[in-house]
Image (cartoon, rainbow, N blue to C red; front, side, top):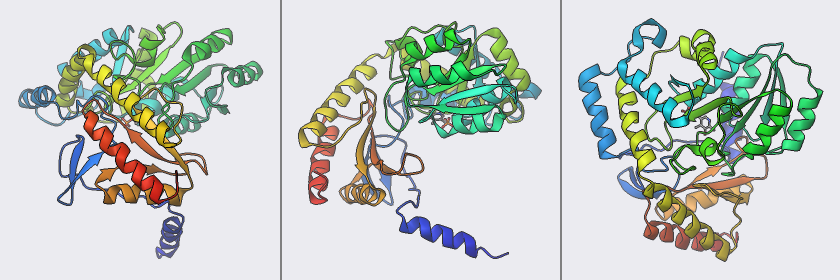
Length: 390
Ligand SMILES: *Cc1c(COP(=O)(O)O)cnc(C)c1O
């Protein structure tokens, strides 16, 4: 069989400005990165607190590699659960105020594993329309009746829950929506869940580190205990600056995941040194509150600048600050023009976001300086004028 049908499809994607390409970084993840020998100011990583390249995190990683070697060597249930993993689980449980926490190798796997361990054909899953792809995939794979409710709309959820006769009901939402940057109305969603005897699962990949006084994310910001928010998912590759993910919750929940979550059982544990590095990044994430203060100041600076030049922002209090452009080709052209000026911002296009809502997804980090944000604003203004966006 030839690959002609694949080439035709790839070609069509290029023509529709939907083709995706990678850049190869020659530096750590940091505000100024190098690609092909040239320096760029980047506003597209999820390293919100600037911990991915922090000297203490690196040191813990190195020391643990001396102690534990590199590979986990086996799955957690076979022989791959090290003391470093265990200590991190205990620390994450304490941090989230949950009885237990369980590590997964990625956030994608945590979501697939958790939803599929909890639900099957007799059950129903209710998802926000704008949930992350891994949550949507998790729900579809489970075989449970799959329903989407209107974005961040407790009334829409309430209606759907009112009609179901499923055995178990699981409501799933991003805490901070990854493409819009807005925060889920968790207190209202939790009340609806309680009324309908449904569980609430929150994937707070972008909330941890950024929201809450100690960086405990949406659960801390809204003071939602395990009674109201039963399944709390965090990822470690964003605010924590390392890699992996965890699910936090009750003893029964975690034991159920250990027994039934296939993405937990049938995969090698994350490298123990990653767990050890994360223990250090967790300490920094919690205690160095200046990182959240700095982020907040940069977010304010950025939003003021964009608003005064007439760029269209979304309702986001978080470091995810998308600029709505509309058509994919215009978003790509803007992103390319910025790149020519030495600034990286990704253009996010359908199918990641709804048709007609292509955007430039700016993400800010505590590692950025006020001067760097000002340079971004000045360049954005010039490029947006040239292209008739403002
Ligand atoms: C990034 C992300 C994930 C996936 O986490 P990984 O650890 O990168 O696999 C899951 N959910 C949301 C909301 C995310 O933004």
